[in-house]
Length: 570
Image (tube, rainbow, N blue to C red):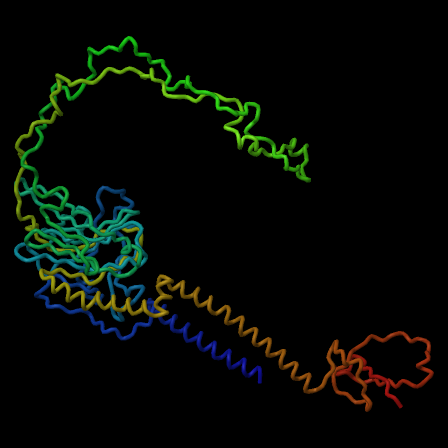
């Protein structure tokens, strides 16, 4: 019965473990961390008339037709690493939140990678806002590298142009996260064309007002949105929350409009120009009675030794109650001396020991003599070059009117693999971008929130959604369960053996009752103690008083020993 109960318990435990293991195995095979239930996700749809590009990456065949991997080489770097040979693939996220959702993944690290696609139609910066939005999931975190996008300028018009996409390809806007070490950035750079001479200069937005450390290490999807408006204002959102905002005219370095005047590059400071406001008085002389050798302090000539001062008494004396330790060895520890304590005789006296008068400030002390400072009669103030009209000055009150955008691409270097990009949209309506996010990113955030409220979700978060961690966790749980099952099986065998002994009334080894047992009828079926044959001794008194009956029988082990019984009384 005990064995039957153990078998039932073991079967139940095995069933539970197997069920969990199967669930984990299914998830691992699919490259996900949780069983994806019906989540309401469908590949997002948007009116093509309202967008310039809407890419969800859920259709791998369509992706391969549309997107072009660069065949160019990065300029200005060693030939061995110049090639854009980073690998791009359409994959499900390692932590799948939505059942049929896929993304564009940069699977390699420490390689240059570039890929681009043409817009459905060019975006002209006229009277409508420019809105670009996309998701980034740094599935392995980010140590050093970018995850930004480039909005390529007019002139990149064909797929052959995209094949030559590299770091010097002209772009209009660069936007997105970038990190290396402790330097975290959220780029917004636009290339401004000088209306006077046609030169191009990059303008960098001020830094965000909030810290964005978590986006590089939490391995969750994050939504990046840039809105640039015809009134020259801009706003950057991260996960729907404002992270930066300002004006194209006021919040970029260098500023869009140069100063009207500049320092004359040909103006030089005259050699006799004196910028010293004060100088040492050249007519001053040290007074004859000025003693630079006089000390700052002298002995007080009016001091008198207090009455009762004990000149012959030291302030500290050896402790009279101290005793030399019993384990003190003079040869090893040196000569023992009692510790010093305050002299009790000094407590009632004004002082003990040799008396000396105190020091007081020296009234004759003046220190080192220095000549005073006086106004400089030659002082002309701080010199500055004269200002002249800036020959390159211009006034552009509409920097929003940038070069038209015809393509978008990723041109990256990353020291962390598995960068996932998803749900890229370019439009001129903020509401359209918000609706796109509602169909995609918002569903992911809802799933993350719901998972974080469950025990399993917290376990997955704690293991950083790593399949290897699941295996370790399963082994960790299985070891104590296995030991417990082994313990139950061993205990069951012991109980069964005890029950069999009781059932047959067998004699067991070291049974204290075996020697005192008297079998009056000479019958017994239990096991007997085997003994080695002993040499015969001379007959004693007991042998003369009565016969001892010995019965030789085969033991339960097959007759390879003797079984002795106590002599029966006649």
